[in-house]
Image (cartoon, rainbow, N blue to C red; front, side, top):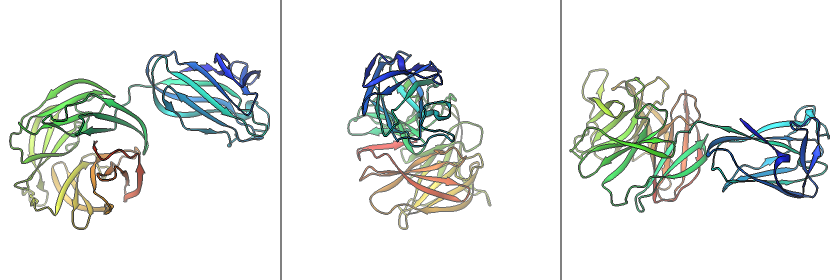
Length: 389
């Protein structure tokens, strides 16, 4: 944790230093006009940081603070919620230490800019800005632009986009297609799963946040009728497994993985009779992903009825089908499709990411023990991008 005292900002415009015995450094900066700016260079190591601000929120006005670091604009802070016991004096009763951003990537040398506006008798008194270094966060959603070959990684802040960064590109005319994501090397960082549409080879980009760390490959599947349809831990061993569907025979299978190596390939069977569970490839039902939808520790399988738009999941016990569970109906306007699952709200139930390929809209279905809890719109991205989680 590093606190930078506001009075140490070398460039003050319409801010002045004011003594305050309740401030951490014995003084604050405050506005001398209706608005002002304070700037300084970020001189800590490049990385991801939580950003907090220490300030005084009095009862005699509703001033605002806007902070920009490099090219990143942090959420506006409205000083309109004084602590209990606060009055119209900047003292210990009105002091607040507030999180401004849970994670932001900052380069050494970025400019920190604080813009303040006063209101009534509240003169935007700032004590310090605080930076808490974070471990490299894992990417949550990967994106590929098949027209340009560009790739992106998103880190989410709940259902909102927290951070978007370009990652290593892959030529647009490459036979390698991004097919999914998951932690395949047990480093708490999500990696990218690829399939070569010429040879059937399976490959991995092992990632560290936004950075490509190394490549790996697994067993070749030369029969291109077998398609990767999702990732998830089917056997509850802590390893990310790979879900397959044969678009000719209707067979379904799971690769039980040991890191990036295939441990065992298993057909999906019906628990009641042990029979291989085949779903005809007639266009009525589409397998659209995998994830732990019932919080029992192993992955389930998402299906969509293309006529009714109803979304079901197969509740699984390992690689055995137990029953079908209705979740809800997909939005019917535009070309909505399921792009995968991840636990956005950390409640143990994987949530469902949907994307409209026509408009670029994205939506998250938040799941709980009763099923679909809430559908939430999130950041949009152009229709030439496709997402993988």
